[in-house]
Length: 376
Image (cartoon, rainbow, N blue to C red; front, side, top):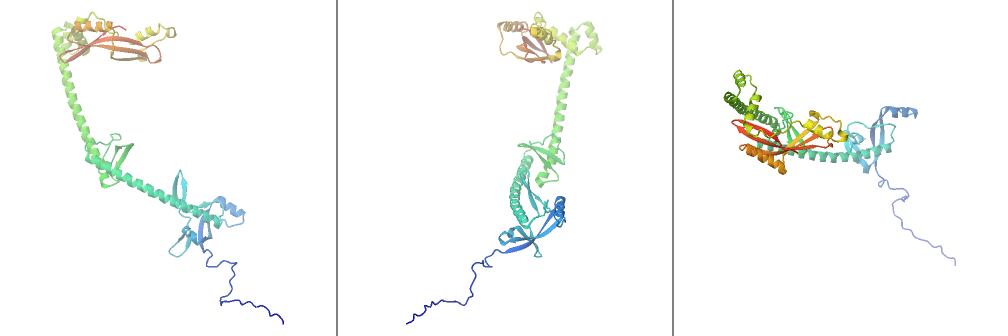
């Protein structure tokens, strides 16, 4: 008996067979062809001519953009899609700047290069927007601070604008932490526009007050000076020499001469004490010439630096001199004074220190002083 051939039943459907080696069209990424426009520089136009290509400055081409990158595409009201190349963004000095102009390239671009440029431009745009938000926040904060400063100035009448430059009705500067702030009568909020006029009003009021005080002080000083003149004239009439009296009546007696005579009379009980020598340049020069390196030094008055102060310590000799002068002038105020003489041309050179005793007495409206030698 012959063996029957083995048969295998295969179930089939009504659908046609599908080639699994090719991807389904529905699964393939969709691509949108968009217009792209850029500018070619003169260098790029020369290169295009050498390559036998079009050398127009404005270059146009179609760029395929996948559906997942449509954020790089703009579609206008007429349904025309364009690659986002304008505005472009650049980083300068650490900040992103917006430039409302087409990009310029030195060579013709391929679609892939344009797509890469648009992607980088998109990233810079996001940075620029974040930067703007941050800047706007800073601007809002600055405006708020300006409002607070203006409100505080208008509320506190003791505040004043800077006097240099002089405030006027149009603008002024207020001192703030870290510098100064300009206020303009034509800019800013209504509150800020009030500042220049108010600052100018206060400035003018202060000027009038200072002028009035100066006039009052000058009147007091003039009255005091007239009192001194009258006192000196009366004293010369009573105690002056005939020559001084004659010159006084003629108005030709110098005030300094008359006051020196009154001082001589007032400090007469202490005439035995030598006066402090006000010849510092000569004293310092003599002191320096004792040293070999300064044997020929010349110290002029302009080269002398003279400082003095009330003594913080005194030797027995200094104190004895001050006590003796106080006994001779019981109505005087006596003070021991310390002097230091320096050579300006060489501050490292040896200095001279001396002591004096200054006596101060008043006679009527006059305050008279004499300084006596107290040694080194």
